Image (cartoon, rainbow, N blue to C red; front, side, top):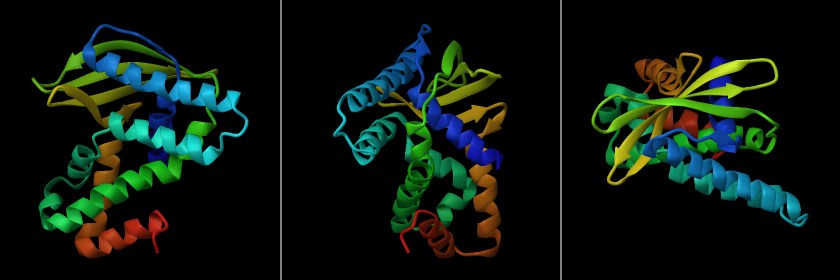
Length: 197
C-alpha cells in the first residue's frame, strides 16, 4: 500500500505549482510541471477536450521528465543482466506503462497541493537530489527527486517520499518474483498488470 502512495504522490507533483529554487535540475522539474498545468488549463477551458487527450499529453510530458531506462535498471539491480536485450526493452516499456496506466487518473484529480523546493544536493558529478516538500491541507510531506544528467539534460530516475524510495520498493517486489520465477514469467506478471493479456 505504501508503494501506491509513493507513486501517486510522485505523479501528483507533476501538477502542483512550484516555488523556483536555484539550479538547473530544479528548473527542469519546474518546466515540466508548468507544461502539465498548461495542459490542464487549456483542457478545462475547452469543453470538448476528452480525458484521453489530457492523459496522452501528460504521458508525453512524463516520458520527457523521467528516465524510464535508468529506473528499470535500478529496479532490477543485478537481475537486469538476467534479461536478454529483447526482454530488457519490454521490461522498460511495461514498467513505464505500469506507472502511467495505474496512476494517471490520480493526476487528473489534482487539487490545491503546493510544492516548495528547498535545495539541491549533489550525489555525484552526474546525479543530484532535488529536495522539496509537498504541502497539503493536513500535512507537509518530504519529497525528493533523484535526477541523472544524461547528455545535456536532467531526468528523474527515483522519487523518495517520506524516506521511501520508489526504486527500492519496486526492486524488492521484482527480486521476490525473480527468486522463484524466470524473467519471462516476470514479464508475464507485468503484462497482466498493464492489461496486455
